[in-house]
Length: 454
Image (cartoon, rainbow, N blue to C red):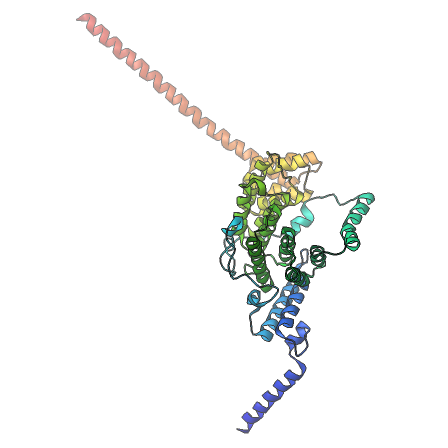
């Protein structure tokens, strides 16, 4: 009984100390002891956006960022008693509309509910796309100094005009998003509506793009979106719903941003529905950026056949006056689809377009393409790769070239072995026909002689 009483005293003393100095959750979120619900939410959002994994981070840095996001979410859960995964329903920043958006191109594509996304088929291989992007496509890196100075001057122009003419809400939101201050951008957006200013389509597009950039892409290895991505996805749905309610005229850029947002959150089917719906509407035809976003989505999600289907649609669209160009990013993801996804049989037109646009891979990429073509038994594609390699001025890998020659000889030998069988069959048929004709002639002759004797 005395031990239990002592234990209870220690527990109460620990709780008093904790109440006096705060908890580890307060320290992790950088909050004071008397922080209210709104301050906790704001601190969580700011830190989650600041410490999210960035594109191009190596595996160790990305893993550390993911672990920190989990700790921030646990701290939010501990201080609010509300799961950070459901923060989209309680935060002023990520409040969602009560009614889901209806009508328009995206209405049928938006999945019901904000739960775990209906991802791609299980077992899809993870593709190291960053390696392909960094190493496989050779892009010109040199920019002449005059052009670089001109680009820097044009980048400073919006700030110059803002200082000269005065800031607008749109310009402030744009600047905050460029500075990676998404929470402050939404505060500015809220103030804009409270002041009676009507947001335009560009305002919503900027905010949707800001949410999309802050998301962490869902992959087959990590099929469940993190807390921040779920909240941002809910906010994108909310913004789209506001545009529907306000009857704001949208354009292809809006649908492109929605396509990217849905794909990054793991809703591949919704992105596919948006994209192919855009192809049927002349005023919303997908641009080069929309095609690049679809290629990126397909390779990250393991939808390699879909990537080649998108390429086919772009080739058809290029026959029109719209004619969206192929970018090096598109060819990069198509090469990933061909090599990693076993789609080299459909890779011939891609090689022809690469040659037409003079976008050639590096030597190592040619070797990967040739090896994949040989492994998949596509000798015609392998021959195209060899010809393109020599045309660029590279020397094909000797071992792969020997394998190609051996496969070609084996194919020719197999064809020559089939030839004698055909020849023998023809000879047998001809001999049988001749013998039959002679037998018929003899029978007819016998019948004629018999009739003459009678």
